[in-house]
Image 1 (cartoon, each protein chain N blue to C red):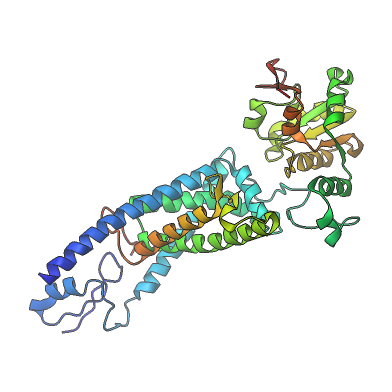
Image 2: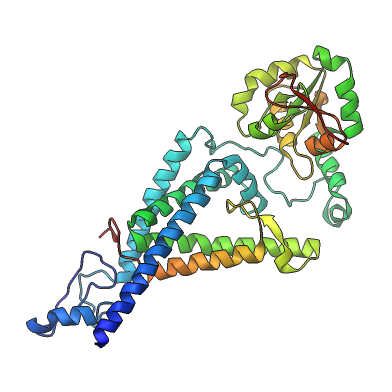
Length: 163
Length: 247
């Protein structure tokens, strides 16, 4: 009885986790493609963050990151190397959220407006967005990625783990 | 009996304690997501396994990204400096305007100082309109260069302006260079405001031999041109599809 109840809960959680995996995958494919198809625009946005002062790393970020996101999104949609991909998404989302947050603070300091009224194109692939909404979205994506990392979302996978 | 089971999914289920052959199945179900009680030598930990998987995915992803960028017609050239005017946007203007003085200047003044530092000259909206109406513009003595992307250019540009997107210069050199070489004055513009594509385009033209004294940056750019109610050409260059914007 207890085992059956636990098993049912697990099945429900896993089904929702599969939906989360597909959603996460679709979001990354969409956002990646929207940047990959306009790399020059993305290059200009990456430059705004003043992360690097050299052409090669700047160009590499702008040229590779969008396609890398597309790749990770496709893996999640297909269910290949799910936990490894989840680790990479978290590795990308955490520093990205930090730099977006810092940039929003800088804009807030210049414009003297409430934090949540700060709106700018963060280079996320969705154009100009309000910072609070963007941070919320990022935390949600990170939560989904952590959920997958915890071992959920195994159903309908081509190859859940590589080994 | 205690054993090690490395399952095909490799995700935290690898080690299952089997207490007697009859209980093996039940134990696997119960302990399916619990941490292993005994770490058996030879079995990689779940953390190590996931980390290794992440590294493999990262390597494959980088190869995919590299290939996609190479094959894409809009792909970036990794070694090219797309911003000859400077990569950093926050760096203070060297020379005449620095430190706290830079903070006291308006964006237009800062832009003018930056252009001066690059040895470029700027024109305002009134001067740009004068050059546009100058008879020399009809004969090629004055040239307008649009440094925006192709889509924005097609949506509307200064009539007769030559397209030159500084992010894909090799695509436009063949048409823009003869126009620039023939002209005595070249007005380069983009989207105004904090857009510095016109500046980068002018520096690229200078690098291929266009004389510095000929190059002028229209700082107000296309938004100001439209605001001033001047004509706009839609579609390709010299399409004669003119629209007069409302002032």
